[in-house]
Length: 261
Image (cartoon, rainbow, N blue to C red; front, side, top):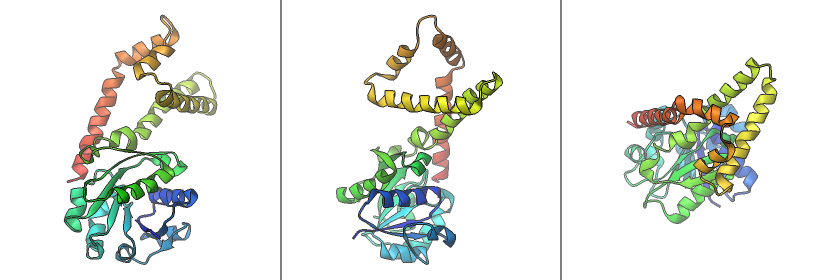
């Protein structure tokens, strides 16, 4: 049976382990975390050290903070072989960085997940190169898709994609806060407003992916000439909302490149 090891069992690592367990994916799961108490609550075989885990497993999912990944890779490099496949969910970390701290031709699959993965509703971007076989990448994708959907993007766009799916939940939550705060200011129960807005987000997302309409067509469908929606849209255009989104995405990507150095 395929052996898959997790280094790091925080929110995202533990979410993937639980997703695999629920999906019935055929794999023997191992895990290592400095906080050993986290391991007892997970359906995984605990390991006493990161090098021990790497020695046992063909697939190694790196789920630690990007700032500490370098020291983790230094610790495990002597256990890495040409058969090891790294699956990294560390934001902003490149395949070159992982290879520079382990072996030059290491097999690397990069993943940009997002926090809805904790509910089994993740939206993850994935990439790899020719060093990883199609079969190996297919297995890595099945691991990530146990907690949601995955889309393949070019490896040189993995930093640019972070703002699209990785950071965007925070941007959406801030947008939602504006509506909920408005409701409270106008005497509407914030809990009721939040439920209505959240359901609207879900429905709007489904319209984006299933209606067959473009974004512009969907906007027009809601916007009756001279109506309330147009009045609100005019203010959003006046405030240059799309320019602000672009600026947020640009800042997010710039920081990703800084972290990768």
